[in-house]
Image (cartoon, rainbow, N blue to C red; front, side, top):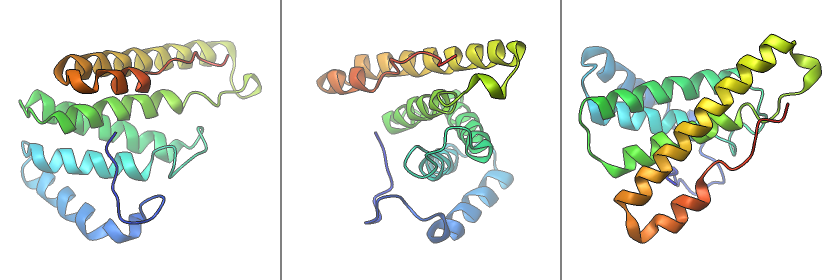
Length: 156
């Protein structure tokens, strides 16, 4: 797992406003910049993960994680071969699956529950697929990747 270690339990987004703005500006000027896409996805992940935003139903965190996934996928599609990017992509999918873990039956109708279950299963499968790929790429840490897999089911 990749985290920002700034000495606190969770990173403070206010400390990274200048970096985030700089990365956003670089990505607007050159959407092919894989390094900026990786770092921006990492910031989105760390400011919207379970430690930073523990409530699974937070819509802003979900939206930011989707943006992070798009950035990570774009960097990978542009042939960035950094294993850290692949780790971040797997973490993002795991966090997106977690965002569906707080669903309660009174909040959603039957169709919404079915749609959300499909989305959860999609993110769960992606996260587990990416962790399997990482285990094959980094055999000495294969056990650790296996422990990070999403092994719970949709709650409804």
